Image 1 (cartoon, rainbow, N blue to C red):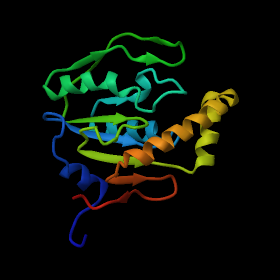
Image 2: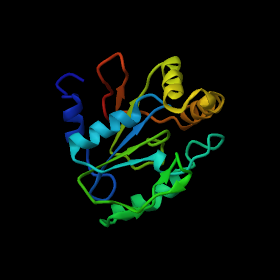
Image 3: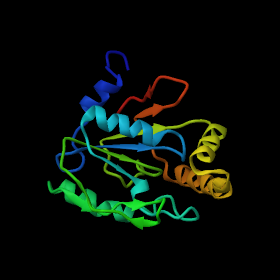
Amino acid sequence: MEGMDLTPAALLESTRPSLGAIRLIAVDGPSAAGKSTFARRLAAALDAPLLGSDEFPVPWDGDPLAWWPRAEPLLAKLAAGRPATFHPYDWRTGDHGPAREIPVAAFLVLEGVGAAWRGCPAALRIWVDAPHDVRRRRAERRDGPAILPSWDAWSVRERHHFTTDGTIADLIVTPDSRPLLRERK
């Protein structure tokens, strides 16, 4: 790694388009790790659109990648250089909201559990993590104590997904440390 600039800014700058002319940045990690907050800040810093897995219905007892078949056609349109329009799911109401257009831009930030899976055409994969007990407390604060049995079961399913998928991150972000960078191949 000697002589390589592996700062987050340099890593972003060195990414090549992976979705047509777009550099797709996938932000992945377990539930309540801080992915959404990190992805919002990253998208704002890059002046990039953000697409999150929470904008699609995924049952707590389902596959962590249940959202992917709904996101894939949007990514295909963007790869073809066309904006993508969809109706985001509203978890609070259990219904789809008004249409949202994702414009074609230099970067697109894709965020959610499973966003960086092997089938994702990401230019850069970022893993956001926090200790299990911290994430569980965050989920309880966010969604209330009644969600904990579902969250615990979901945690097992997402851990299984991460183990079997074998995704490798280019950048690891944790609450206690500066981002850890892995040498890109």
